[in-house]
Image 1: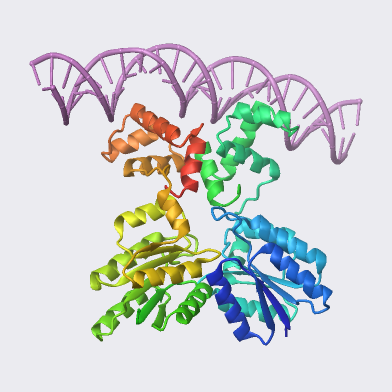
Image 2: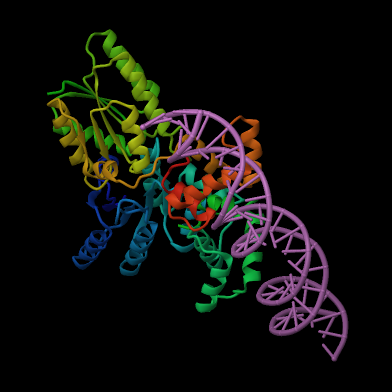
Length: 222
Length: 222
DNA sequence: GAATCCCTTGTGGAAATTCACAAGGGATCA
DNA sequence: TGATCCCTTGTGAATTTCCACAAGGGATTC
């Protein structure tokens, strides 16, 4: 069974709950860090002392400013951790349930478990710990559902940029101009029009307003 | 000091953290309930036995389905509780930070404290408990900020309906038609155009797409 | 009752977006 | 090389939205 576990979670009341639950469930030494950089530091320090962590349980969103979810930093944290200690096991324990985000996460990061916070998140987390300890991966029912949804359209970079500009109030002409300036193709007024039309079709949106509303709700342009 | 405290929080890892923090901070009996109806039941039961709770710490969003925040149920819970036990003290402890929602909440409910979950939410919560125990009200810095923001535009019912229809892909003509059918005035094509223009001005949006995006981000049309 | 203000609605033209049809260019394949 | 396909871009017309100016109606005030 795991001997050293590190928990990264910035919200204090959640941190407290997770730590005490994990402590009760395992015989491991359980440490905790409230911020990304602190987490990385502890991992490096443990490595240096030759008593490395064998499991990291991490949230995805850390409050840089409290207004925005910022999954980037959670991703970055995991990437950095993997660089300094490739063999560490990682379980993501987060409130993030949007299929698009979960999918994109699994596509890029190599983690051992993904558990969504919720009514019975902790019991799912203990299941995940057990599974990962045995060398398996674990996804909780909620995230499994999200991963198995067929109709989750993924957007490429071009489409995300386009939709973001629309959300920012750019006219099609202005988007064209901007794309030309930034050497992004296709960039003619006309092609941009077509791309938008295609997106409308894909998401069954009747207007561009609805289109941007939908992709925003799905968390595709954050 | 409080003698009986009830905590309503559905997410298990949060519940655990809050309960243990509150237990450590007070000498009170601390009970917990994971669902709204259960909370109400416990309060009624305690009243019947003549050992009522003197403080309720409640979240606002309870997961009926896990996809949507549902502040309504938190509001409803508090309303119901106030009916059966008007003198109970109430502290809201929630992740909800959107100014519009906090404001609308304070306008309608009579609560004694409002604390936002966050990095140091628990220490704010203990401050709130102390203040409320002394007969004062307490709002944490984050929610105080939200309440003091000047530029938080509130939308009336008409505007919300209008924006929702826009988000649903309705054309201005279709909105007009719909408003006529439902006896909502003003309902001429022309007036709807004007209302939208006014909203664009209010929110400094260049296009209707941006307008709907903005109000959606602010949580004004959920 | 007249003056004033505010809101709703109308009109017409400008601007932006949507749509159908089509030309050109590059890639693939027989 | 020619045929085919896919993507980008263009053109012009229809639809939708934006905007400036103004008329009518109800409420308030003097």
